[in-house]
Image (cartoon, rainbow, N blue to C red; front, side, top):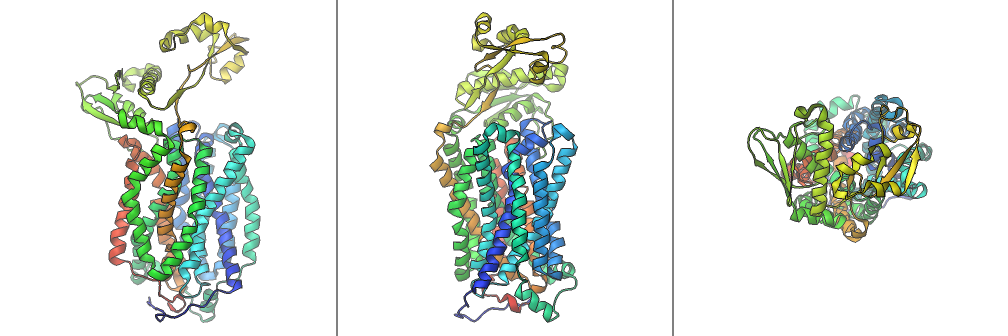
Length: 628
């Protein structure tokens, strides 16, 4: 592959109005495609409840994230299919195919019945649609970056391709804006029940706009010139990856640039949102608004760093972004905790649980799929603590005894699920209740909701909850509602057997007698602090992502450029980046430390930093029109 440079000091010709129009049209279509793709990540909690409702909350969250990752895992295959197509028949045709697949797949998610209606078919169909989205996106980015770069004048390629780099963030921003607007119009309850589908359905309108835009686009001048000269590749895949001189460039692009870029990108945008909602328990609407504001503030830096890379090079900016991320992720996410849920941060500073367990009772709990069932008393205890973001230490105890958990002055004895047999469910409820009470008393931000108690269970409820100091007669004299036997079963207040013969029964509401929930007090959430941290994370994203399209385009010749750059980009972003949220969450859960998952992006950023500094060439002065 030729390494062709322009003469030093040569002045780049400005881009014509027609070229600007083409780049605008290309970028706008790509924004819509990213909007479609990232709706899933933004609505993972609701999708998990709809399509994986047979699982508990933590498992639903992990399954939802894995289905999100399914769209990423197939992206490299989309890069191969559509990259080859783009190098053989042209960029414009490929654009049309990818946008149609993406738009229709997204629309179908909006009308897909949930698990309650069609059972296991619901999650299977959901993952199929996610894979179609991943295939489409696998062909989209390489085409858009190549198309814009081949229109850009020499010496300004970083600046013009940086507009394509804004599309992923603007697509995420657009998805968040639409989600928040729909939430505000419908209310939280309606949105959770069915309103989350509306943003997916709106994608059909965006599909129509995108197809109309792309039909008006012209083919890339570099591709047309190559075709006219008969220099096109007859086998782009074989030439790009079957010949070592090109395959080694793809490997260097992957490990020397894209892997680090990917983990920084997904940590700064998607995992930060997941961290706010699922770990710090900031309400979804507020979290979406704060992330959207940070994206709006930070998006301009894509263009700034893209333009700067035309002057000082692609490599220095990307490597600097990796270094900053590696050095500051831990303090930044700790600052995010203090700003987003200060009560949780305060409790973690002052209260650590101590788990005393028999030797061999504690197992390694790396559980990325969320399907493992913990049965030993130590595993049950530590799993529950990690779900509530409680740090803990494990100390050895006498052999043959169940684990105990000490929180402040309270000590709670655990249970072994196998030994408990058919009493395991009741033992689990009692154990979790005692732990929650201890955590609440120690200062953890847990709130206890109201309980609905039918008449037949009131006396037992009063006896089982002495901490509430209830008087059954006083409860009966208070507010109550009459429910039929059918309603009691539907509300899960009685079993079908318990409701046999019941025509109507009073149901009492006991304030603060229900289940515990970890929350972030809205009055204590520092919006300014959260947005400031999120903005810094976004700026790191712009440093590694802003110049990378130009870098990847400049590494490969025109005849295999679409194919050559697409595969490393989508392996890095689809696999290393796409799997980050589920893996980081599982790592944190396994270790009992909400920050432990940050080692995932830090380690991979470090690998890219070393390889990139040693072997990645600087490409800003290459002339891509003369590379054959």
